[in-house]
Amino acid sequence: MSRTTATVAASLPDHWEELVTAALLGTDRRIPPGAAPGPQAPSDLLDGAAAATVRRRAGLRPARPAERLRPAPEDPRPPLPHAAARRLAALLADRPGASGGGRRGAAPDLMELLPQWLQAANSRGYAAPPQALPALLDAARGRTDLRPAALRFAGPRALWLARLNPDWRFALRAAPGGGPSAPDLRDPQGIRRLWQEGLFAERVTLLTALRSRDAAAARVLLEETWATERAEDRLMFLDSLRAGLGPDDETFLERALADRSRNVRATAAELLSALPASALAARMGVRAAACVAVDRTRDVPAIVVEAPHECDAAMERDGVTATAPAGRGERSWWLGQLVEAAPLGTWPGRLGGRTPEEIVALPVADGWQGELHAAWCRAAVRQRDAAWSRALLGEPSAPEAGGPGAVSLAERARLLATLDDGERAAWVAGFIETHGLSEAFQLLGVCAVPWAPPLGRAVVDALNIARDAGSYPWSFSGVMGLAERCLDPSEASRLDALLAIPDEPEDAAPGAASYWSEAFQRLVTTLRLRGAMLAELAPEEPAP
Image 1 (cartoon, rainbow, N blue to C red):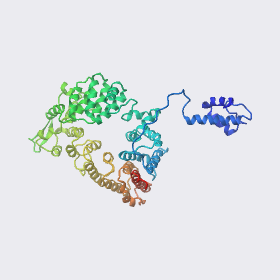
Image 2: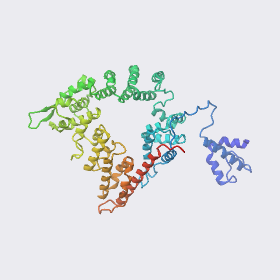
Image 3: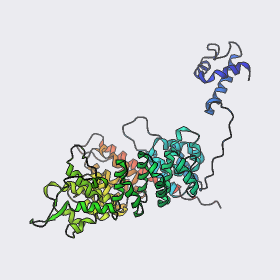
Image 4: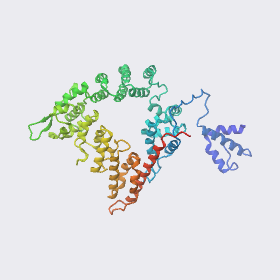
């Protein structure tokens, strides 16, 4: 490189725009930075632009020589089929529109299909194409909901890349084994070294990963250092015991009830109350049973409630919070906590041998029904008790959409999560047939994907009814978006009849008919695209 070129190159990082201006105007009218006027100026401009382009493409400032990077680890999983790799590239290239609002049109939203594609690819054990890893990490960086599936699919090479780019460091925190010193979970010495010497995020990741593999070993590791951990760290570590929680954890959790941190004590008590056979659950059952009984002297038997008059030290040790939130009475606050933590098996014997359905159907005197039923709802969710969940949910066709025990649709959704997939889908289908879609969005969110045929039919029928009635279409956009992602792709052919633009009733919103037609067109197109995606992930036939 000539002396003049070297001078230009030295100034390039701060003068790129001036080089561009000189190229546009010509060197006769604008001398490039660092060059002299004359016949050499065009050559200097080209040399400078070439050097600047190389620097911009390299993306790094020149640095001192260092040890050469080690190669990325191999990914032993089978490669994606070619069609699936092309589909992944298209999904990653799609970006939400910049308009920020307005109608979505009839085209599928590819980014909303990416989570489903990743789940299907992971279930088949494929490795990510190396060239797709940067875009995949960028997508996961912008959407935390993508991270678990994206990092699982990306594999060990993504962690190798993440150590080179600060924008992708989240992968080291989010992926088990992501830390630079994370050991193989089959390496006891490496596990112990990281647990004793690692950063907090690395230790949380390690404990979570180990808990899913060997619950007892994770608990033993935590017990060894428990007394020396900070309170905020103890809380996070204790929360990791939710995975694989079982009777063997009771002794450790009982000790945690004496912790100096109120939040740690409360979490330990919550975990113990999720074990109906634990000693804490038994103590709470005795306290709760003393507050609730059946009054048989009435014409119709009814539940009577005598809430606690005080919160003593033993109750506080077992996780009862003494101070009620603003707007709540102390006694009702204490009662709710006792009933929530008591084993649900307490109540049939206490309340005359009745079944959960019979107990929930009993009237509750003096306005205590809401508090009592809400606490039973929380207990059913915490203890994963399907029988009590069914009783509190009631029949989906019941006139009251809130249910006999649930205080909100959100509570109902949590109760549904304790049922198996088929029963959950059938219940929500029955609810939609009676109450329509306006109350069903949260309930649909807990149903397994793809939706079971009865549920899919109920949703489509309800959308069709809403369209024919001239309902305001934009109010159903959330359900329509769920249907695009959750309906079984085989339903696409059944929906062709809904693509035509219907006649608009006189009282319909302007443009509603064309919106509905557009939305159903997008639904059908998306379902067919999802079907194609799944077919592309099938293993390729070997060449003859």
